[in-house]
Amino acid sequence: MTKLVASDLDRTLIYSTAALGLTMPDAEAPRLLCVEVYEGKPLSYVTETAAGLLTDLGGASVFVPTTTRTREQYRRVHLPGPPPRFAICANGGHILVDGVSDRDWQARVTRRLADECASLDEVRAHLVRTADPAWLLKERVAEDLFAYLVVERALLPDQWVKELAQWAGERGWTVSLQGRKLYVVPAPLTKSAAVREVARRVDASEVLTAGDSLLDADLLLAGDRSWRPGHGELADTGFTVPGLTVLPERGVAAGEAILRAFLREGERS
Image: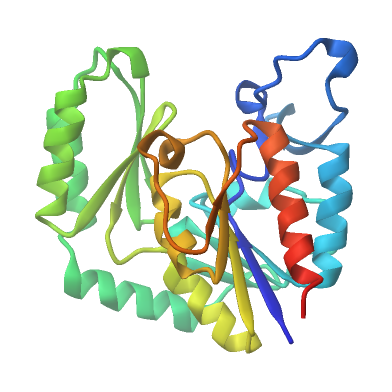
């Protein structure tokens, strides 16, 4: 029996310094392992305990990192354990097989977005036209698939976000605000669709999933069993579905709890 484990990365398994959530004295804080360096600086971490759990998980299941990161951003991350054969990037826009994007999947995604959604150019033009320089820090396009803004969160008007969500929804796009990043993503571009494709390829008998943001909601729905931490957009909205375990842990401790849960389920036949 093949168990497939598909997990979000940022704020689910790996954590930036700001997201670690460590409030205990330094003497009691867990030892950390850096898993991402960017421009010569450490960027993301797991605990040493989580590193061991990741190594065990890679040997016990088909582990599929499942992220909104671009392929370039994903390749900066070096997780402990055996290199995953499959990875999902760009919110499901790319399935990597041994590090190489699967062309057939790319073509399927491209056709579906063209058929069902307004164009990226239209969405990007709207963002640039309506965003206020007072709170807009950067505007970016990811993999020619979706757009995101880096914003000054304290100055970002809630009403603008609501109006953008309505405008985007009418054109087949979704909006998700995660920390200082506001993502605008085509509704058919989902992690769950890519996970189902990988599950089909490996003939998975069970799919286990985890995530923390609104962009992970469909991923959690796709799992036979799923977990979310006590922080993040989904926690803020009280998101729950059948088969979902809501963990009390927050920050880097939640990453350990999720990995332990994956391994416990993997031991069950």
